[in-house]
Amino acid sequence: MKRPLFLIFCLAFVSNAVFSAKVDTVEIFSKAMNKNVKAVTILPEDYDSRAEFPVIYLLHGYGGSYKDWVNDAPVLKEMADEHAVIFVSPDGGRGSWYLDSPVDDSFKYETFVSRELVNWVDSNLKTKKGRSGRGITGLSMGGHGALYLGISNQDVYGVAGSTSGGVDIRPFPLNWDLPKRLGSYAENKAFWEENTVINLVHLLTPGSIELVIDCGTSDFFYQVNENLHDKLLLRNIPHTYIVGPGGHNWDYWKRSIRYQILFMTEFFKKAENK
Image (spheres, rainbow, N blue to C red):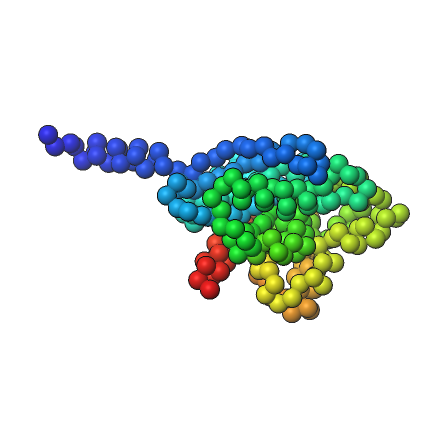
């Protein structure tokens, strides 16, 4: 018996809808901080049919959590399928800035994200091992974190990005729990100087890590991003810098993350073809 064309179409739609990115919440024990830390993983629809996938780590902003990216930017599920990439979004704590705090031993988020989490992901998921298959980006505090971790751990990441990132923390000495992580600026200036992204440019050489940085022109972090861009130009460090209308909000970040992911997946393709 012939099936109506409409019914065939509906069955095909249902069949295709079944196979989509898989979102899960995992817990990873951090030996450095002696606690479990949650993370969201997004696996592409063809996860079971391929041997390995590149990974992009997504860092949330101040006051956020591991759930922010998947909840507020659902396009990530589509992009995981489209680009055959795994996303991992860890919880960065409240105001961690993704640092190993020099004044609070309970905050060791550089060690957690760039060592413990990466090792767990590579041991438990079908990842492409090595920096050529690994990227990191984030928004606001997470934008600072992604560049900070990427530049400081070039053996781990091949590409790093930031959207609306607080890439120079020194102009904000009283904000966002920064004094809790670094001590007061007046008494601990060296900690602030050592842990602000703009002062890590000396660690870069042309081509040592791919960088993509963007910020809205109405964002309160716009000027520090401009300053970072100028410093990278002065040091002849290749990077992609994007600005456009927008503020410090999800309207901007939902648009921005598409460009960040496209940039990173192009890097993965180039690395694979070398």
